[in-house]
Structures are given as structure tokens and as C-alpha cells.
Image (cartoon, rainbow, N blue to C red):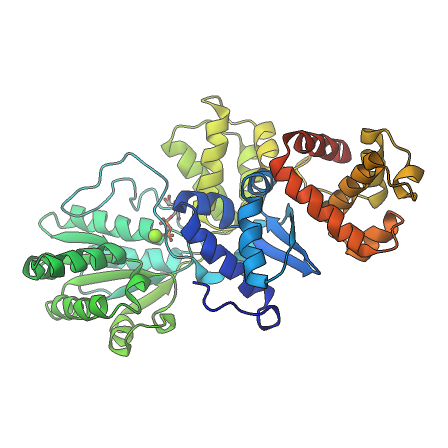
Length: 454
Ligand code: ADP
Ligand code: MG
């Protein structure tokens, strides 16, 4: 979490955004965070204008609309100055690299599947529904070895990778297959957080004995998100003994983590070396072919009718990971309200025009569209007049120039015939803020954007 307030100069913009995301993460619900913020990046930081990239038009609008002030408050505090925010489109690929392994695991979206209380296995995640491709074929091959010969093939088996790449799905799938192959085996799946919570409860209630028994008497122990115990002394200690007991008895242990064992800061060396004693594999985000296959798989499971073109469009646009892909797909499916998913709907949702990324708009076009909307001539917009009406139109033009073109404040000042770029800062700030509070202005802005792009 954001520690002692850093100064701007000591903070790269990447770090700044990480701090903001960390704060957002503890402020909003996990689902909100995942949907709205997990794919945002900080694009630029110029004077007091902070430009934030969102992966699609839908999210850009929602984030700006709902969370402008929340994000601004955090940013102002972090940077110790008053900022204006501008939200623009950025492809998820760029977002992904910016994020790195910062994010801890989150629970999959609300679902009504029954976990088996004895194993904590979720029938939704099987190896049959797990799409195999370039990014995970090594992990999958190892999994096939393990389900034939648990405890002997690779032990422990350590799977690491970023958020949403299918670690939990694979881990659970392995568990289910082992159970099928060896019905008498005791299998237990636990998130490392659950392990920790249960340990705390057991210590409080003086039931440590049954806690130990529960975890040390299984044939296969599947622990998800082991990074959670890093830095937690008690949990590490207990897990170390659990691990040793099982390992020495030849029981299979499979772990997942958001980073490799040696990168788990705060994890004791003796645990790191235990984790590295077996096979460590990574799972990467899916490539295009896999994304297509995953969309098809999910649609088949849900019996959703969707065309090839729509599938390709989604796969091209949502590049970050399988979970985001699934999230966007399900939002689109919800919008289709039971009808087959049409390409048009997908285009609208993703903010893609004519199947291509939005083309670059000429500044002239923006100034003209704003002028037409407010019934003003270009000469009036760029002229000296300061009547309220003209000033507002000018500020709207500044806002669009910054937002749609990402050009510098100086350039914007020049395009609009202003001598001083601080007027531009003020203009962008005013409109950005009002976008989230003033419904009428918002309507106007959206209408102008339509015109700019039509
Ligand atoms: P992680 O644990 O790595 O964060 P999950 O296993 O929770 O990721 O996967 C997120 C979602 O994406 C799940 O609903 C999962 O079913 C789906 N998913 C991920 N990878 C695949 C895959 N290779 N094939 C099918 N579905 C996948
Ligand atoms: Mg997971």
C-alpha cells in the first residue's frame, strides 16, 4: 500500500499509478476494481493534467462518470497538488505491460455453482473446459503427468503467472481429474488466504489440532495464491510444517502464485527452496488464437449464439488475460439479452468503429464540430471574445483536443488562439470535472463526440 507520501520527483508515473490503484483497491469492491480499474494506466502527466488510459470506450465513460472525483482525490493527495484528469482510450495490451504482477488474485465473478465442501473443488473448472495453447501448454502437459501419478511425477508443482491467466482453473482442474482417477484420494483445495484465516481462528479457539489434521492428512493439497502468506510469519511457519509432513509422506502438493518463488518478497528462504524443489512453470496471457478459442469455449458452455466476426473482434480488442476476456464477453452477452450476439453490439460495446481502431482525428475537425454544436464560427472560437457562451464552447474544444488527440497544452493553446496554456489547463479541468457532475453538459459532450466521429 502507499506508504509515507512520496514526492513527485521521487515517483515515476508508473509508481504513482500503482499507488492510486492500491488505494482504489481498498476503497471499492473487488468486482468494481476488476471491472473498472484493473485495466487502466497512467498515460501522461503534464503540468497539472493527468491523462489516464482506459481499454475501451465503454469503460472510459463509466470510469470518468462514476469515479472522477475519487481518482482525483487520491491523485491530488499523492502528488500534493491539484490536478485535472483526462480519460482516453488505450489498448489493453499497453495496459497489461504497465500492470505487471501487482495485482493479487480476486475471486471469479459471482456464480451459483456448488463447491464440494470436502474438497473445495468447483465443478465449473475442469481440464476439459481448459483451453490449451502457446501460453500454457507446458503447464498443461505437466498437469497431465501429475494426474496420472500424483506425488511422484512433479512434487511440488508450482504454477505462477499474472492475474486472470487461468491458474485457479488449472489447479482446480487437476484436482478434479485426480479425484476421478483415484476416487479414494483425499483432495483439498484452499486459497492461501483461507489457510491463514483458518489458522488464526484455530489459534483463537484452541483448535490447532484439528486444523493441523485437516491439512496434514490429505493425499493432494492444492494451495492457490501462496503469495498471500509472504510476510505472514505464523502462516509461513505452519505451512512449512504442513508442507514437510505431506512431502515426506509422498503426497502431492500444488501451489499457485502471482510470481515465481524467488520473487516472493517476505517469504522465508526455507520455503522458497522447498517450492523450487519440484517443477516450476509459468502461465502467460493467452495469444490471439487462444483468446478466440476461450471465447468459443465460454459461449459453448453458456449455450450462447455468437458469430465468427464478433468473436474475432472481441479477441482482437481484449488482449490482457482470460479473465478480462470473459468479463467483457459476459457483459456483451448480458446486453444481448438472450438474442444471438451481433457484431454491431460488440462494436458499440468496445467502441470500435468500422472494425478498426479509431482513426486519428484532425484538430480542425474537433474545432468545427464544437463550433457547429454551439452555433459559433471558428473565428469566434479562436478570437478574443470572452462571453460566457464562447468561453464555454472554447473550454469544451480544449477538453476534446486534449482527450481525443493527446497533444500538448501548448499546442492546444495555439490551435485555439490562446496566448497562455494555463487557460487550457483551467478549461480542461473545468469540463472534465463537470462531466461527472453536470448531466446536461455530459449529454452535450457525448453528442459532440458522436459528431466528431461520425
Ligand atoms: P487466475 O487464477 O490465473 O487469476 P483464473 O483461473 O481465475 O485465473 O481464470 C480467470 C477466468 O478465465 C476463469 O473463469 C477461467 O475459467 C478463465 N480461463 C483462464 N484461462 C483459461 C483457459 N485456458 N481456458 C478456459 N478458460 C480459461
Ligand atoms: Mg486464481
